[in-house]
Length: 443
Ligand code: ATP
Image 1: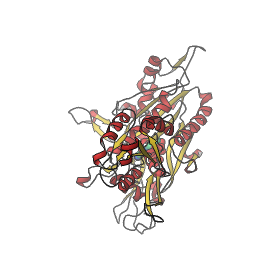
Image 2: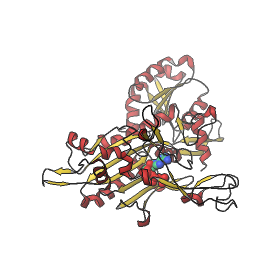
Image 3: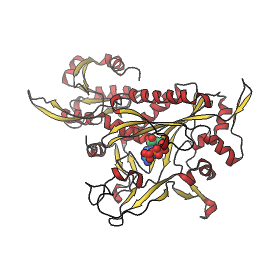
Image 4: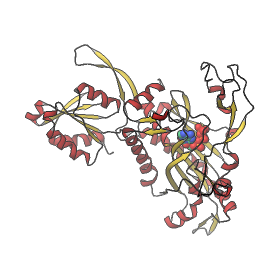
């Protein structure tokens, strides 16, 4: 499947636009349109419910994007959060050295930058953190960074959260929020951007229990992806080799998805040992250990990190939902191609669309839609031919369209059209709510 088709559908239907498009765009930044923002909200809500609200052993947090700069000294980001960068002396292209074999030469896209004949500079380390200044004076003492991951403030707030929430280990702290990385080569649409959102859980455990929890969270996340409609066969677990592991990590596995550009990391699940809390204790001089009331022991917990990008998950949902197929038309024996986004009903931007066959008979259906709007994402669409309206809702993945026609005025029944099968059923208006509730299950 072609990534350009997804990019074009996202623009055409108001899901995702290039940031600052009227000024020619800005590389690595994206804006989410009216339907994209709904999809994103539902995705984040689903994660939050699954990770925080449905569990007694995880609490939430929402911290500032700019933290004390010592945070990044302690975490190692200031010294080590770098990618090796090389330039081509001929075309002036800039590449990540560790990805150069899968990259393309801007002048000869059939070749990688190593094969195209241009001379490459020696690699140099480039720190990915965005720098800014806090306050009016722009000197070295005012330097701060936009966070490159959300989890560090979970560690620095560990003591406050564990005391106030009265949680006992094992327990986790979760956060959803923006992160920023000055990526050398932002690419593949929203897969790798410079501003993105992360959903991260830090699950604090006794060091001896970390392998069990690591395995638990990998399975838990696979189940969640499948629960929001991602095809099982397109997901796989890739344990990191020993030589890939960060020096503090005891283990790390990526959940990968088969994107149109190949298998790539969707989520990272790492056993980070007690590295982070120990580092912040050292650098801040504040004790971040945990006291176990039962055993009367004080120790620094290990942590299993569950870290996934909102935008990357959204791209996964878009790629997984996209289908092109031949569909029968109103003419007997004829068919035409249709694009349909088979989103899981729980995350589709619009759940039910209400479509009067003609404007002049729309009033009763508008009243019904108002009622449904209280609990579901709905749309009332009376413009254009019914065929065009169905096609629009197929392309934005609306699971159900409810049509009110001239017959409805007589028999108080509507037609419910199912997105995937395109089957149509007549349903009495006063039975529509239980009917849809049954179809949607317990969303
Ligand atoms: P990569 O190797 O792809 O650069 P990473 O291993 O550095 O990623 P992590 O630091 O583990 O990524 O980040 C956790 C998650 O955050 C990733 O699995 C991904 O879903 C998301 N993520 C990281 N960087 C980006 C980015 N630049 N754009 C969008 N999402 C990102």
